[in-house]
Length: 259
Image (tube, rainbow, N blue to C red; front, side):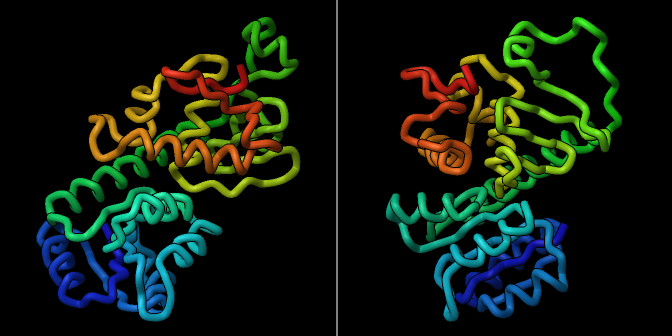
């Protein structure tokens, strides 16, 4: 497993690299954004530990660049401890956010969690890539018939689709479309939308969503993480995010997709 550490504090980077190396990770280090871009291309890491403040730019810019083409797991590291900084980091597409100083045990636990989520999504995508069979006549649910579409269908190229009004999600390709427009989603945003669309019309408790999309043990995430990610999805999917049509809040409980 390859890890790219993007951190200008050489002492901290070397300490993390040493600890990760003992655990069997293959570690490379970049102290600038320029070096990080080169190593990202040449090393093809499986995850990135990304500092927010760098000599030639900031981690948020780099995170956004990565998210334009990749769902690579990103754990953001920063000395900034303001809530607004954490929200900004998550909004840029980071999968998790860790404030300095931190213990190596917590860092490893957070990284393991991010990697497990990524692997689980890959497994789900592999299953979704299997050729799907046509549903027998009459197998659509009442909700699907009311909307004139199947919740899961086959496209011409054999990929399974989840469809609701203008929204189409292709698990096998990790693609989301709103009409003809492709929506850029981070890995976490994609997992969340996938889970919501799979359970269309059902109220999902906040605890259910956190457990399924983030961490099965319920550790390392809080309600604010969920709210931030829901907000990002609404801005990408809804014509009026303040009055959402697709992702609705059920006060005191959780969320429901396309009620």
